[in-house]
Length: 488
Image (tube, rainbow, N blue to C red):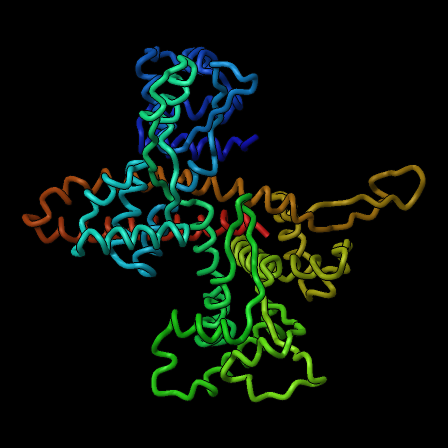
């Protein structure tokens, strides 16, 4: 069951993008769980004073089904369907600008245009997608680009649910015209893979900050071997140095220009060792491989086998769980520093040390962290109040009196992340409300931007600056949600 904060944010997104009726339906499904259509109609009428007519509710459900915001199934193989709201799909709509920016940077403007049309319609047929994509390339190249997007899981094919329902009805009516049962393949965006791409960019940014640009490029090359499986779990594959070198030149063609290939390969190997030993985002192994396989490799054919039959081959793999722990740790450290200062972060890190994490009394914490008593107590109480730290009572005597007890502070990361998600979702809702207010305030100025006075131009510039700051806040908070939902 989703939290109340998540339900409020999801309902706000639905109301802004699809209107109040869709927001009511989404709120009911998120709050009450899977329901039949008659139950949805009853609860929507019950929770709102203004009546919702049957056609309006039906259209709202069709819109949500079209955009995959609602899924359905038949639990007892009857005609009655049970509908369930997909909260992850609803909250992912906040990430649409990031998806478009990533695809435009990685695949070009034509690919971003295709993704934009898919996000706009929810599901779109191949013919309509190719027709409406405004691209300066001939249809064969445009279709080739579509196939590439499907191969890389930016888009994924799906069957039109209306055609599926029509085929079921024809089957139930014992239709003899089986040749007419055709389904048109439609496309929709792949939320899981696009979220994964954003996480990959975050990891590369961490490597670039901690090491250097070449190490970040090597990390990006290694991340090409990471992808989701059919169960939406992230899977990584072992990659050899030859494959890494080839992929690196494909991603960064300028790296091999006017350079010795063997020298570039040695640089890649040194960065791989750095990512294994220092950053610990990769793991390394030596795999025994038959000699005749190496004879097909130009750079290793001259190497003699150790025993005449086999050679040890180095391979690397992305340690996705370790990378996720690092990203979550850095995210939480930044949040703790922003909320409680450097002293609060020092206390938090101390209590996180050890396996399992430590439980310490306040005087011991103050002595190790070198914090004044009064300041330390204020920060400790504030962290306990916001569910960052927990307290455990240890009685000195058998009577269990509070006055004769020790109070130990400790960190429960599950509770910390749960409270952090609630805080982030509340902040997102506040920022969205503020953004709409700021947008409504400067909209009259935007409508006549070419005929403003000097004072009005300053007001318009300031309003745009505030909107940019609010949008940056969206991106930062959304990164926290991605780290909290990390699929390791």
